[in-house]
Image 1: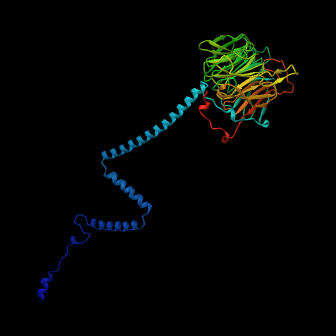
Image 2: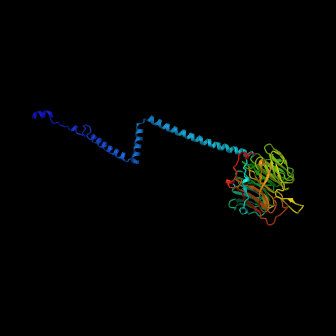
Image 3: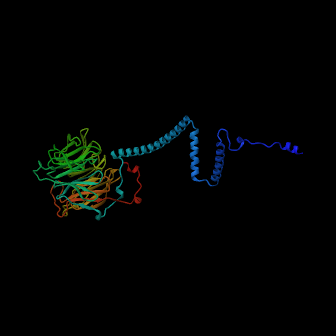
Length: 481
């Protein structure tokens, strides 16, 4: 019986060392390490499944990236990066195309408006929104000893240059009203040693880039200055009479000058050169203006003509309309202009028609004894460029603002602004935010009257507008004339 049990159970098994867990003939420690890593990994997986942290998620993402990079061949990696790069280029090109399309539309619109403005076809209809300024807002800048005869405003509207019968030139800061620079006038007979003017300054002009300032005087001289610094550059000689009108062509350094010698001269200021002379008026020229085209307009004084000079063609158009001496002229745009006369009238013209489109008689009223009344002499006119707003001045202690009616066929009075003295010069700022009037005790061309108690200086007149919500919506078709 004992042998049966021994056979059934068999002999006891003898275990070898290589059969024990963790033993290996090649590397006895590898199996144990693998088992330990497996248990640790299982433990970590159980923890992260219960509460996954942000750090572990980031680590897995990094491991995944490493695995992708590890699994990719160099060719596959290059192909993948190339596709990403091409997609980026495609998106950039699409965005750029959209931006270029938008910018091109804006530029095309601006160019179209610029062309229309230059042709006088597109106008800023602002007259209907203008409001009379409060008298307390009008500032008087004093600095000249004698009556102010002319003025200009810098293209950026920051400065005003004024000149007077005392032969001086002053540069003003519009915002503060302070004098930034003064070029003193000299006495008669000191022309050889004095750098500036020694006779009454009658006219001035500034280039559209604000680089050059030109001034003309009774001594037949034209002085050229560096506008930012008021440094004297050179002078032009050639006129045989007082220089009464100056104007830079917009967008260039071409300068047109008019004189009492009845001639028009053309100069290139940038090259310090004389170009040519044109003749035609039968009396002294009293005013001149120009735009962006190679032409200018002049007022012929007592020959009672307005002339449009086509410089390149060396031809002129002659216009008639006033009953008295035409003393001031200003372009509104390339197609229309305004003039003032000593007969008291203000006229609106088209450069293609020989007669005025509209004339207002006694625009500033009348003065004198009963039965001997005379109209106030219109001594200055101004226009807000490419708009429907113009202004005129006299010695009735008022500056009158006008609206050009539809199609520039009539002049409608807006309101008057109180100023004291002879209004010898008027200029609108380019932005249309203010108007400057140069005044004095006497007329700029003579001493026929003298208004005692009047202060020589500049009036800075703000131009207020109705609030935006009360303004009428602009209509592009209404702005075309």
